[in-house]
Image (tube, rainbow, N blue to C red; front, side, top):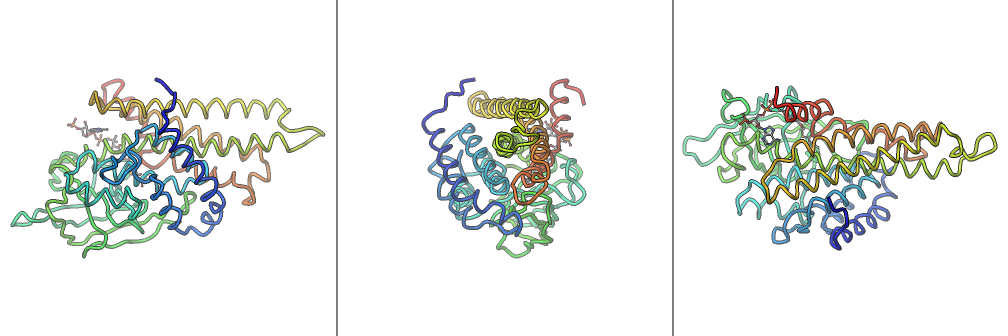
Amino acid sequence: MDFKLTDEQRMIQDAARDFAEQGIKPIAAEFDVSGQFPVDTIKAMGELGLMGIEVPEEYGGAGLDAIAYALAMIEIARADAAHSTIMSVNNTLYCNGIMQYGTEQQKQQFVRPIAEGKQIGAYALTEPQSGSDASNMRSRAVLSADGSHYVINAKKSWITSGPVAKYVVLFAMTDPAAGAKGVTAFMVDADQQGFMRGKMEPKLGIRASATCEIELTDYHCPVENRLGGEGEGFKIAMSVLDAGRIGIASQAVGIAQAAYEASLEYVRERKAFGQEIGTFQMIQAKIADMKTRLEAARLLTFSAACKKMAAKQTGERFTVDGSMAKLYASEAAMWITHQAVQIHGGMGYSKEMPVERYFRDAKITEIYEGTSEIQRMVIARMETGLR
Ligand code: CAA
């Protein structure tokens, strides 16, 4: 692994950091309280090329690689996790999947506006009765008699950016008897008849990233908007999540870094018993462990991103790498933000400082795009070959 950054990687990292510092950090607390979707900053991030980092330029993206994406995600998450959630869904769950499995027409129609930041994309896999057990879905898609379109009836929950998305990659059963092999992926347009947005989720953290249920009732999806073949949907969903999990690992690193930096500043300034609290061994142990876990998480994340880049040539799966990065980085972020609250004492518990927000935001990284329990299951199944 060579971690010497290219000029392009450094450029996107700098651009993301500058925008995060100036455009996002000052408004993060306000949007956390209001829970409003940050329309203007998301649009500006699109204009900076942050919504389709790995999408080739001919489809409206920045044409960069997975390391560049991880670097930019870390910078945005360091300022505000909610912005990085919206960015991660647009980039990986939405754009990457269509770039990998879509037709030329689908790439032009569905990727370009999202990669250019003009529209928002979403990914609809989870249902009210199935989160971890993703293939156990009740959503159905039936091909019309003339073969021109599918009629989709679906209820999806926990859809990130659902309230604002123009297009959604949606998974439904075309052959329920076939289980996971009966799942098919579709491109769905939120402005078409039969698409309805449901209840909004009031959340513990990442509050400015809008989340809701979506429901499709006799929605007509033209056959050319099917993504991949019939029955290929589950593999598409899973392989897209392999990449998505590297994004969530990056997000966790960004949140953890913000909590670590705040703690470092605080222990140098805050005095107790006549001296800076950073001189106390119990605080020093926390700082040392926080820094070590933060850097280990970063390395696993970059390692997974490198494997993803190599996969373009080798065609090898990077499932275990993505799961390990997400598992470790999300648990590190939760632990580091917990320590940050403890180091700040009463101020850590107060909304006057951002550390309580980092703590709330970190929690989701252990849950979405596969819980820590699912990541452990994926890693162990692939390592042992047993199930
Ligand atoms: N890449 C390619 N193919 C894959 C794959 C991958 N990563 N993972 C599984 N498959 C294939 C398998 O090879 C198998 O195909 P074959 O039978 O041909 O070999 C098929 O898919 C079925 O796989 P499994 O038998 O392993 O399926 P399973 O039902 O046991 O479930 C699971 C596997 C790992 C538990 C999976 O259901 C899973 O990852 N669950 C978690 C779902 C999840 O992450 N949800 C998050 C929702 S999205 C979200 O959070 C977005 C957001 O808003 C931010």
